[in-house]
Length: 310
Image (tube, rainbow, N blue to C red):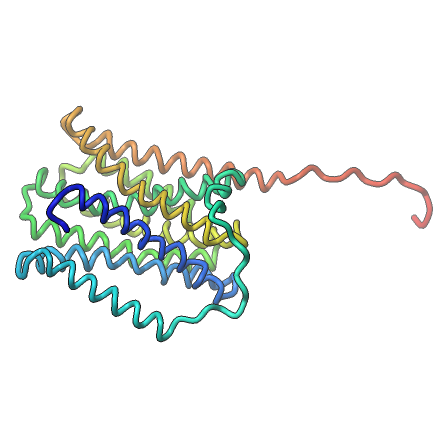
């Protein structure tokens, strides 16, 4: 059913439900580990986004060699294998999950600034990874005249570094705190985005900035999901669903923005600067949340001195 745009839209909608398995898997994995190891566990779990790299490298070759339908059948076979392994090996953690409602994801957004902060952080971290991975081949072929195969291999290297960075971000978040890791990630993305805006027309600075950006974004995605069970221990699934959706939107909008920027200005510099602006906004929001907690509630007034037992 891939021969019409309408069918593709319907299948994309259904794939969104399949993608909710990510939100299901986060609390599933999270409940098996104590808080001091959850960042590492969720970072390793999140490294499954490496499937993006494998699909990008193999699906076009399968389609070229055996037809596009074959690529989908191979994907279906891999899903069936994962399903069989799940039935054979997966078990719920001994701790009973908390009661949940279908209204929880909407209610999460009304629970305070932390929920919106997580949405913004993942919008940048995962969305930035997806956007650059999708747009990098076009940038390399259009600006630097690389062959499509060469551009695709470089994009795969970009994605691989982001995949490696995700568990590293989880481990670092367990050791030094997710907020410190995110602060470093946002600063790095801000600086690198400015570097890309200035030097994307030169292949060496472009390569260096993109590869470092991939690592920073991967580390950031791992750190974000360390914060989810810390800030929302009883709503991990609901928060993960909302935050994961933000990451999907983050991957959807930047390529469109880059295209509009290219059409309007004739270059991509403004698009990269906008990415830096989002990183700066993330840094300011994170700092604001930290300062709010540092201030804390007002101290209670001391009891009046009675002069007894002093």
